[in-house]
Length: 110
Image (cartoon, rainbow, N blue to C red; front, side, top):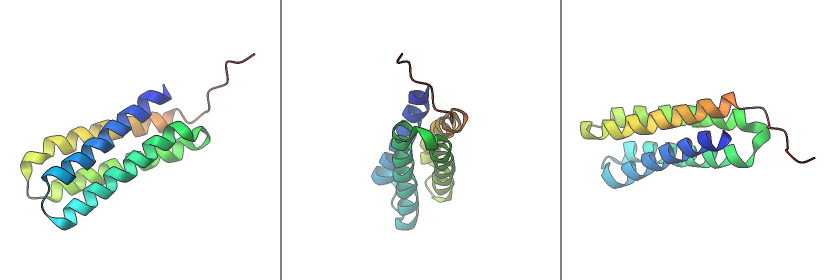
């Protein structure tokens, strides 16, 4: 189940980065969306690697996914809002799963 949260967060962060790099032309908005996307990607990787601090990484994914959507909303390019909303939805669900699954699953070894 932790893979689902990290996977959704990875896809949301990647979508955020790709759309901001390819389609945004305002440098300040571009920097904000690209930075929030990279931080989301970084935190999504650590959702998998650092199981003891999964709630912290899930919260970071949750926060920066929202920040990326706000930056898409501040841009004058309204055709990018569906992409920003998709990245927001994937990041929020992935971050919520990371927060919800904050307990480390017990090992199945005997």
